[in-house]
Every structure is written in structure tokens, then in C-alpha cells.
Image 1 (cartoon, rainbow, N blue to C red):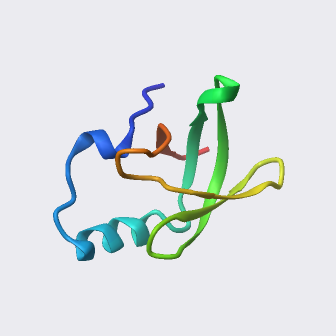
Image 2 (cartoon, rainbow, N blue to C red):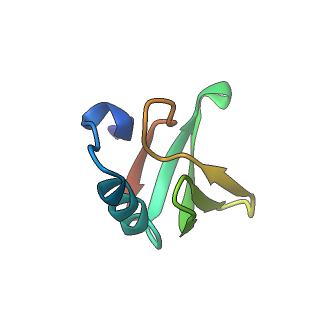
Image 3 (cartoon, rainbow, N blue to C red):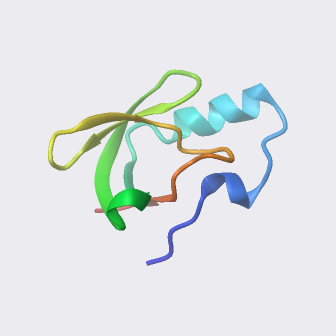
Length: 80
């Protein structure tokens, strides 16, 4: 499995591009690497508020995650 930091792939030049990418992740399954736990957790992106995503994890936790940008956690879209 390859996990990337979205912010390291390229620089989004406009707010419109940021919103488009943010909206495209809604309803996708993601794997997010939590550095403190040294583990990846799977969840579904259920929302985008213009700055961060709402991720509902398999264990029921609901967390606001910044999936993109310089301080983003490592994550990837998955089919699981």
C-alpha cells in the first residue's frame, strides 16, 4: 500500500481548485494514517465544509480532517 500526503503532490493555485478537490472526496472511502498511533484507519468522507472533511471511521468515530495542504495527514482513496 502506498500512502501519500496530498499536499506534497502539487500546489493548488486557486480556491476554486481547492473546493473542487474537496468536494470530489465526499462519498469516497479513505485510509488515513494517524502518526501518533503508527496506524492507518479506514473511513468514509461524508462532508466538506470548505476547509476540512468529515470522516466517519469504521469504529464509528466522526473526525474533521484536513485532507490536503501542508499540514495534512497521510491518506489515500481506497475501495475498501
